[in-house]
Image (cartoon, rainbow, N blue to C red; front, side, top):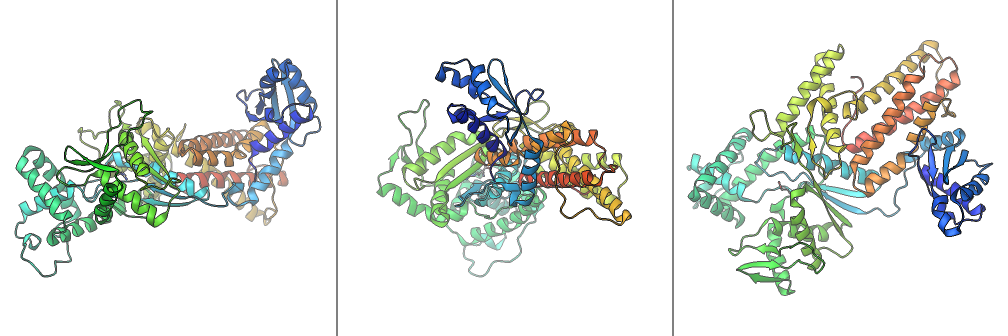
Length: 593
Ligand code: ARG
């Protein structure tokens, strides 16, 4: 289905052509004076130079051509040469009725889908998730869902940090505490125990303890580095411990991500490409891309047009150890071979911008990534507390994700139970659903690259540009529809099956209809620009338009049966679009709140 604005533009282009002007001048945009018109065309202004004519004359000529338009209700040429447009009620209603019958409300989907990998989440195994990982999960999940909805084949890969020093630290600390464990017996040949020698809470305590020790004690750190090296070179007992750490930690991570309504198709990690590194290094050397500099193996990635210094990409350290880079490059190589993606999208803190610039350049230059594969890094800003500084607990420590979520859940529970009677279980469940909308919408409604302030009061408010407000609107619609259903049942008649959206009967109704008609454009833009915040802006506008209509219209008590059934169709469409949008943003609405 064509986009609403495109249909309007086409009609305007036709009018320009009919009046003897270039049709390209007929592009229409949303009005920036909604008090005067719904849409506008500034083509006559641009045409003035071309035709050496006053713009108002051109606009007048074009307006005349629109007299019997099936699209325009009014076309006004206003000084100095703008065209102010309003569309016909039946044109809008027809469009909406078509949207109701088309899959995805008429969204145009590609014949040949792109294959996309979204690399997001990126937690580090055995380290607790903290708010820093929250943004990657929230934004990445939404970008993935938007791309899927737009008709592409998308895989989300969590890209676990599961191969680094933190693993050696944990192993070292375990040895410190339980030296008798069979994993440390180098002569041991038998099978290792199936049960891990620690629980998740022990694991979570071990890592920070080990990390603190290593900062104070150089020898301890050396041991941890050696343990890391032994693990990576395949010492049996260390690998067995690593497997335990992975299993225990992953179960916990899964639970945490589930609570966030975030899920990954691929649970791959840095460790998965470990065995690919030697082959990749050989290739880079053989093709002459990599050379030794100060003992390290590097690939130059600077370009002539650079305005700032882009250092070489280091592949191996002078001691032969691989780096974060190395696993990322090997992962790109692996993904190319296994999935042949058209795009890879990475979500991390924007402080990794330069890092990804280096990695991407290196992957392209060395042909590890194909020439047609787009590599895109989306760097997001920091989530700050009300003091404008990175978010901390009340005590000043790093805020753990679970704790943050619990605080919002509790706040939401309090609000909901203040508002209405609800049994404990439903109130808890509802609070969880609404709290998730508060967190996610609070994040996603900002342009990703910007820092934002996590403001509990604002995010959990039922009014304003918030997740709970959007949910509240959906719940309101559901409740109206339920009431009408009940009325119908009592009256023994049901609404006609072939209900249709009727021509708007008020300004508020028309404004609502035009908002709805913008769905395809909003979804397309959110995909094209990997910009969930544009979808948030769309649903906020739609929710506002609906609430205005609701406040001005007595829907439930309307006696004209046809009018009412038309509104039912309209409400169902608004509800379905809002629910679709929040689903691609990664949250959902309760039945009541
Ligand atoms: N584990 C990393 C971190 O915590 C993020 C991984 C991002 N993805 C990647 N392919 N490098 O910073």
